[in-house]
Image (tube, rainbow, N blue to C red; front, side, top):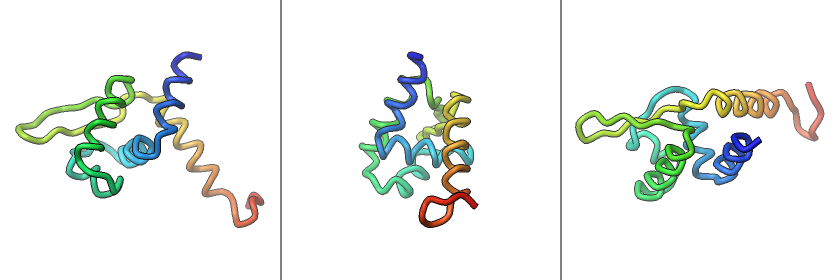
Length: 96
């Protein structure tokens, strides 16, 4: 239960959710993450550090670039379920 609470607390922040959803497609450097979050690099870096401390993402430094990837399989499963469910609905909340 503690891990689930940790995951949901992390994902309830819009910036962190955007980051994690963006990482579903694979590893990205901070310079690739900033544009789709529409946040300043400093804000993105702070949120990435929080996600890393929670064990949701992992960083890898290559020279001056730092790349991040999701390392928590539960987070991937949760987001896939939520995203699949939201795409299977039509206007008005009726399932296809």
